[in-house]
Length: 275
Length: 150
Image (cartoon, rainbow over all chains, first blue to last red; front, top):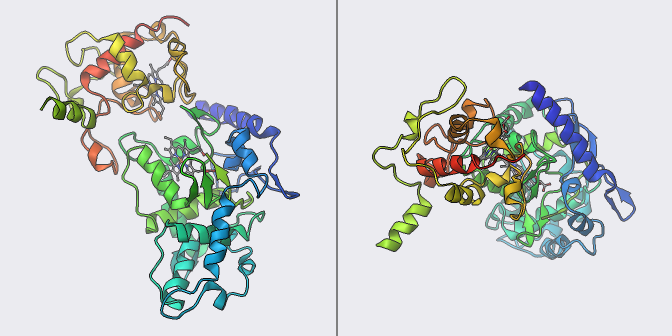
């Protein structure tokens, strides 16, 4: 079994490489790392690939030029939101933060543990919204939040993902890993069955990627909007007829940390484009 | 009434009729084969082909290439090609593989199509239900038996 799995993985890696061989993700003169050696903690995978590598030429092309990338409509809306006062304090993001560019590097390190709690970019934004602006919490994957997190994550575009998995992050990372390998739903599949054992293979019309999140939040042609990491996790779980965890739940945050760590070394691509 | 029944057929798994082997009482041999028909009714290969291709039923094409269905778009490549599968396996093997492939291939990604328990966190509406009915399994197996050409 082990041998078969290994042979398959080798074939798949070769295949993945072929699919992306000629494709170089180069945006405005900057070359992105879409393929690199897997981080040391990964036991069954040697090389990690961005989901971009597995998309069709047409979908890939949309990410090569920011003018063609439909995500930027939403990023621009978030820039307006950045200056919009909300809540009892009468403040906007720009009342406290000089420029959104001050968040350069933030996304590459998230999620991370703060005061004993695992926090995502969405949590950090909501802390400002509720505690500093005195406004109602933004819904986890709503349009305001997905746009704002895309705008902030975009400031780290091109930087390598580098989440911390040891120390106080370790218990969350372990939980995320357990979820990643647990078979769930009526189809009894784990994330690993598709994104570790079968990346590079077609599953009906879909070319399976490694399920990396370095491009999130990202634009999907399927629903013509910005999609969040937890929204994607939810979609994959529903496809295997499993009850998803809630967006923003401890489980999905832990899974986000674990999946992010599987992409340590890939460039942040936010906002990426997928089908 | 007729209408309501049709909807129930689609949404829930088909009820177990008298004389059918229930998902929990299927008898697998040590290699995962199932000798006894699940229904006692000869499988219908034509319906089996439909169940095979249907995304909400077998959705076998999601993972398997099948040249017999060359006209249908998008054959997956997660599993082996099923061309000539009838020459590689006996009918009892194929019944076992479709009913619960994990008995033949431990740890496989291929779903078990005739079990109704042991799911972790299933969506409520699928809890306690099998993916296919006993007759649908027999029909798919009958269809697989027609795949003789490599």
